[in-house]
Structures are given as C-alpha cells and as structure tokens.
Length: 370
Image (cartoon, rainbow, N blue to C red; front, side):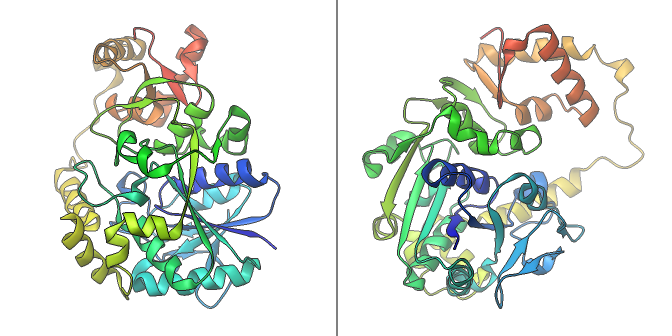
C-alpha cells in the first residue's frame, strides 16, 4: 500500500508534494507522486511537457503509467531533472502525460491508484494557481493544475486539494487566495523541511525554495528570477490548506472547461478562451526567441580577466538589489543576473560562506546591505 499524491503544476511541485507528504503522513510512509515532466525552458529547451516516451529507463507501473528512476534520462534534445529528483526524494515518481487531455490523465491516475492500492488522492500545489479564476494579470501557468483537477473529477476516487505557501509562485496573490482557503490544515516547520533539505543545492525551483525558507522562519521580501515582482514571506507562507475537489473545481473555470478534453491541443484552446493565453504557445515563442538571439559559436565569453573580481561584482549587484527593498534572494537569481557559470557560482558560494556565513539562510541568501 502506498499513498497517491499528485504534484499539480509540474516543475518543482514534486518537491513541495514530498515535503507536504512527510509533514502530514511521515517521511517513511510509502508514497507515489505523479508529476508532469514539464520543467520549463530553464531545464528543458523543448517547449511543453514531455511524455514517457521522451525518457529512457522508465519502469512500467500500468498500461500507460511509467515511473522515473535515478537511472532514467530524457532523450535529447529534451532535458529533465526528474531522474535526479527520483534519487533525492523518498516517494516514487510517476510521469503524468497530458497529451490525451483530462480523460487520458484520468486513466493514468486510475492506474496509479491500482498500483498503489490507494483509495484516496492528495493533490498538492505550491503557490495556489490551482485556484486561479483565469483573470489574474500575473497568472502564467494554469493549464497543468486545471487538467489535474478535471482528471481527478473523472476518476471517482475521493480527492483532496492542498495549497502550500499561498502566493509563493507569484501567480495568484496571497491576499486573493486566503479568503478562499479557510483555516490552515498545518503550518510547516523546519523539521518538515528535512525530507527535501539537500534538493536545493542543485534544483532551480524558486516557489518550493521559498516555502522551505518560510517553514524555517524566514520572513521578509524575497527576490526571485522567475517573477516580475518580489515575494514577501508572511505568517501565512508556511501554511498548508486543504479543500475538497468540488470546491477547487467551483473556483477554477479552466478546470471545468477541460472536463471532457481528449488532447493537449484542445486543452490549449480552452486556456485561450478562459485565460486569454496558452502557456505552451508562450514557451514556443520564447524558445524561438532564445534560439534566434543565441550568440554565434565564434563569439567568445567575456574573459574573467576583463571583468572586476567576482566578490566586487557581487557587491555592486547586491547593493543595487537591496536598494529596491529586497532582503533575500534565491541562488537562481544570483546565478542568472550575474551570468555565472558553474565554477563561478561555486567560487562565489564559497566566498560568501567564508566571509560572512550568516548570509546563507538555506535555501536563500540574505543581502548584507538590506
């Protein structure tokens, strides 16, 4: 017997789902997390979600359900961090394939329930866009969450929907979510983060990192790379809320529009009608722009000798960032805004840990001049 959980949005939601599972049921309780292999262009240069056939080394767990293991790998040119997550997280990971719409996902969830011997499904979303109404100007990625809700409604398996860290993904503001959420089911603590504590040494997920930081007691304005505005960690940030599937469906019009969808193109059309955009189309446009604007192979990277010393570059960047009111930043923001390679990132990390160890408030960094 295993508990069956679904990481609703893909990306880093599997990390949050593992943490919520450990907090509610214990890290040692066997579980399967179903997640999209949809990790955006920061990880996967191919737009949209990946299918099980895009991986080698997966393990069958039903007619269509495939499990990711540490020995799995994405087939080039696709990329995925799921195999490495499978090595670092206690629960098993299974791939959700949305290419046959909500009805196809419902079959996969039913297969997963049979594999687990589970009679209940726990859906987990970090941030809360699973409750988006489609009109939010900051909404960016509603489709995966909405498809999961629509699919669960088709399975006839009792389902609970959990929102962890309201507003932390910068899509639906915390203030808009809290009236819909009611009293928290649980407030995560530092002990609850132990199940995922090493993942952020290498994984770029920012929303899950902010949730871990909030559970460890960090409060204040946090700057991320993957959001237009900073996120403020508040007393509500480490909370987990539980709703019925029916309540979540009532709030989410895109999920209702996807009820009978049978392919991903149909789901995209529904997203355009309800939300005014397709996130997959946006990914296609962005990927094409990245390819067009990529530097030619002959263009050399700026020589380190032509740049100020790395600590000096960081100090200038830190002062400028702190002046905007930001007190904490993610590793990803430092990495991308300073345009560091892996060796430079490790060099900077070591410098900061040596010169000012209190800067590191894992998985965030405190700005000294804030």
